[in-house]
Amino acid sequence: MTDLKSMTPDELTAWFKGLGQPAFRARQVFAWLNQGVSSFDEMTNLPKDLRERLAGECRLFAPVIERKQVSRIDGTVKYLWRLYDGNCVETVLMRYHHGNTVCVSCQVGCNMGCVFCASTLGGKVRDLTAGEILDQIIFARKDSGEKISNIVMMGIGEPLDNFDNVLRFLELVNHPDGLNIGMRHISLSTCGLIKRIDKLASLGLQLTLSVSLHAPDDETRSRLMPVNRSVGVDALMETCRRYFETTGRRISYEYAMIDGVNDSDADADRLAELLKGQPGHVNLIPLNDVAESPLKPSRRVRQFQQRLESHGVTATVRRKLGSDIDASCGQLRRRQMEAGR
Image 1 (tube, rainbow, N blue to C red):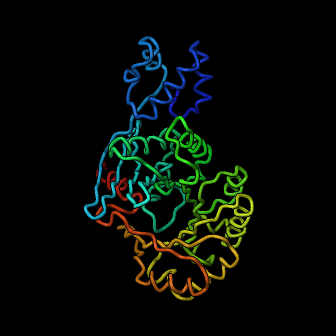
Image 2: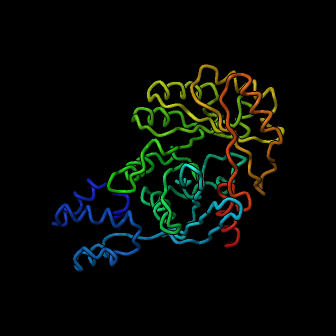
Image 3: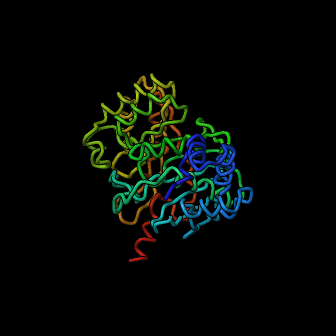
């Protein structure tokens, strides 16, 4: 069935023209979809016969809240959405002084195999469509009743492994007749698919690229992130330099702090040397506990930050939200999967 929600306004206009409908019908439908309707009957300014035809030819499914957790500490909300095919993905609504941020998933599961991440347990099931990614923001906004100002693509899945759908999502969420969230308010996180980073750079989008680095050397990074075995730290950093030269956008380097693995002074020194002359900053992430992983949160986050700063590297510590709920990405979906066995 036709997926109207993943179509751009121009594509909708052409599609409706093929039905013999005027262009303004496409604008009406695009507006309704971005309001979070769950059926064509809710599109009350469309003729009844057109609504019936759309219901027969198109898929319109609103994600269902399978589980919802709300932090009593900071108000962070974690949603587990059930999709049209029964698969589930996670979305997190985080509240900051500068506005609300939604962290979205882009795949059901993940193939990257990072050992500290619950999202990758069980591998990738499928990619999300552009509409399914967009729905996470639309329905988080609808459920909370609050405006969404920022988006981070750091949920379940590797965005650059779902490249075409993610680009289409970015076009949709940025559209002035849709949610109209500017590119500078969007961060996209990648484990380092270098060919896709180069391709993204060529598009000149003004989003923020976040690179999940997590180790300053090949031995440690390959142990934590299997993708590094085919990429390598040096090749990744060279790609990041090209990205900055092409786009002029500074890169954020994500670094999960893991006890006894990547948190020594020597690790900080190697990381500082790796980033020498590289515009950007390091975002230190206190590791979330994952029951299936033996890795534990570092006890040296502040010391590591100070060591980096002594080398002139800008380093921040990510504020840990939702510590009293299933904060780590993929945990809530994993629990749902285990409960269904």
